[in-house]
Image (tube, rainbow, N blue to C red; front, top):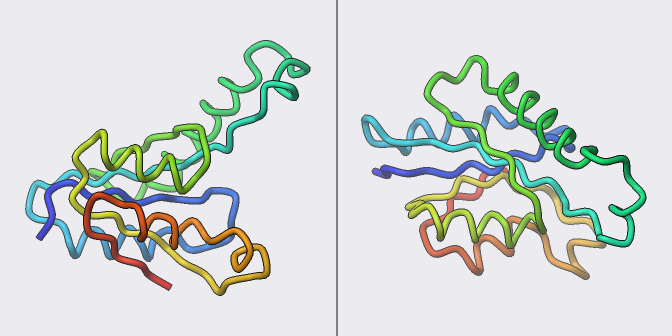
Length: 135
């Protein structure tokens, strides 16, 4: 069905990322590209100036290694780590890389989700492509 699928993975949550990846494999055409994307929240500059040099890039490398470990039993899935606000970064990545489907996990909304909106809801509203939401 799809040739270029994006699967956002939140490494800082206890959700099962394998479910979203399995859904992506089912939706993928033969030879399709599947990318697992983790968004590292951007650290404000007024905080970043107090961090040791290389801390942020070191964290990004650690997250990419962890993501690749999570994907060890999923051959053919590419791991990417970007920084920014999760909802915006996912939509931006999908737009820049001609993604034709995003498979995003959702959860039961908490109070902050009602006030600010969840990442999945933002992706559904603003994505330039089809979005499959799994629960």
